[in-house]
Image (cartoon, rainbow, N blue to C red; front, side, top):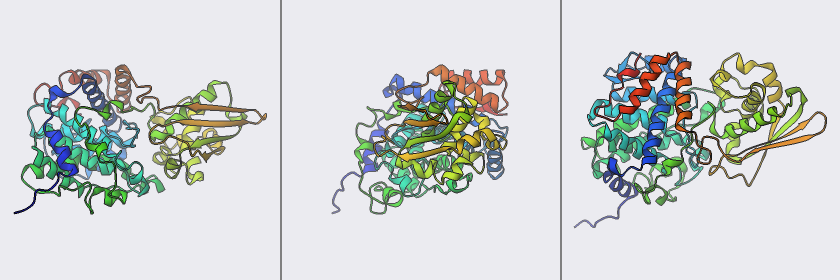
Length: 456
């Protein structure tokens, strides 16, 4: 007789997920889910006219009735999730979980809404799916912090496939065994290298959408009885072995109190459309400029930084001071800091070909250097610092103790709404269209998920 096996990490997690209902979601969590959805809607609209979204949409050969936000064309559920995920993450203006760092909304919202638009007439389940998927994605990033990035992979891509599988599984009402299979299947769909950093390639944008569509495919396969490995997380050839080079981790960070304690409550919404860890440095630069200092007054700026951010945001330093293209500029702190100083902020217009050639910005960026602060709290907290030495010999320091828009200084619902409106305007929508999208939010989960009003 076969001996009973101990519950795997996926089985423990799936049991908790299968027992959840909409009535168990706290009010604050429901509000966060609403903010995520509205933010994603706006981000998709902002990117609707970009070359990378057009290329991705033109590259699909599937048809269906699911909404590609901001476009007349419809796709099957996986295709819609792919394009909406690419668009939502494309301008790096989406939410961040600071402990990861991972981006949840651009993966989970496209996956769950597309799956429900096609496969589930009960819109209330979409809310459960968004909550579950976001929570799984964020918690996975805490099991072995920083290890996935260090191994050369994009955590949003790796953990996103798993979170999307869990979220779609919950939204479609899969039982615990089916959710285990969905997670096991998704483990073989996860992927995403960070070589895009070398030259500002488009593949980071792909990662969120790829994870979203992978989650749908994994959940649908599992629903039909396709079997995945139950030890997908901790197994000797499991997810963490493959993408973090270890099977040793804090798996209770994923499973403990799941459904009763929600880390999703601490998600951060970005004030600037660029790499998250750069944002506090932009705030410091804006405050320095607000003192009345001019770019030509500055001899040198030195920033204290976390060692874990150097390979993405600071090196090679010459490329970060003078980015090769607009996308590379989103991950170049010297350029971003200088843009915030010279122009009083960093908006979507900071990444055009003309903008990245701004001589005044580039002259200041060339003066920006860094030193590693061994006591920097990253990734548990994102801080900013600069020490400016002026040509007259005086030295001025600025510090930002946390990420604006995060748990310590969250954006309000009105802030998120205003961000949506600006993003929709950037994407070419008028006030009437934006107002209709805002009205949709009030009834989104009442019956069948219908996103057709977001087409066009």
